[in-house]
Amino acid sequence: MRIEAVDWVEIPAGVVRRGTPADDIPLVAERYADTGVPVEWYLKEAPSTEIRLPAFRLACTPVTVGQWSVFAAATGRPVPTAPHDHPVTGVSWEAASAYCRWLGELSGDPGIRLPTEDEWERAARGDDGREFPWGDEYRTGLANLVDLGVGTTTPVGSFPDGAGPFGVLDMAGNVDEWTSTLYAPYPGAPAGVPLVEDWAFDPHITRGGAFRHDRDLARCARRHSAYEEDLAAIGVGLRLAAPAAGTSSASASASA
Image (cartoon, helix red, strand yellow):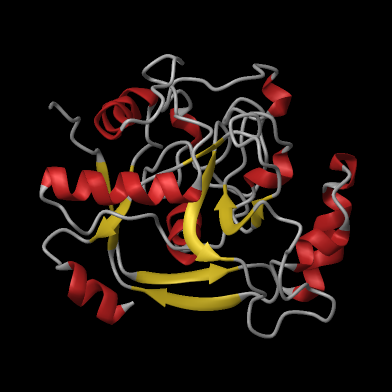
C-alpha cells in the first residue's frame, strides 16, 4: 500500500493573539455587513487572549482526494470521484479522526491528529494577529471563496500568494477544516454567547471557510461548528497536525 508523505510545515513555539477584542466586534460586524452575518456570530470570537503554544507540525495543505482514497479503499469507505489533487470533502469528524489514526499507524508517526483550534489560529495568524492568513486586507484571488466564482474545490496549493506567515497554504477557502476542539465560549466571553450550539450537526469547531463561503469565514479568528448534515455540500475537509519533529506524542501532550 503506497501512501504519500505529508508535506509538513514546522510551526515554532510562540504566542497567538487568539480571538477578537469584545470592543472591536461591532466594527467587525459592520465591516462584513454585506455578508448578512449577525453580530452575535462574531461575539464567539471574544475576548482576545494571548495563548502560548509549543512547537508543532501542520500539513502544508488539506488532505487531498488522492490521499483519502487510499484510506477509503483500505477501510471499506466510499472512494471519492473528485480529482485527486483537490481537497477531500464530505468528511465527518469521526472519519477525519480515524484517518489520522490510520495514517499514524501506517506511517510510523503515531502523533498525527487533527489540530486544536488554537494551533490552527497560531498557524494562520503567526506573531502579528493579522486578520487573514496573508495580512489585514481581503483581496479576491488569494483564496477559493464564493467571490472567486468557481463554485467548487480547486487543487490544493493553487493560491501561493495567500499563504500564511509560516508558509501554510489554503488556510482560507477551498474547504472548511475540522479541529479537535469542541465548541465552547472562550473564558470571559460576552454575555449572550451560547454555552452550547445544540443546533449544530457536529459541535467540533471548523476553521477557514470553504469555496461556498463569504470572506468573513476567511478571517483567522472566525470560529463555527458544522451546522448542516451535508458535509460535502458545505465543503468540510481536514488538515493534519502532529507534534514538532523530534518530540514524542506524550511529551507534546504534557506541554500543551
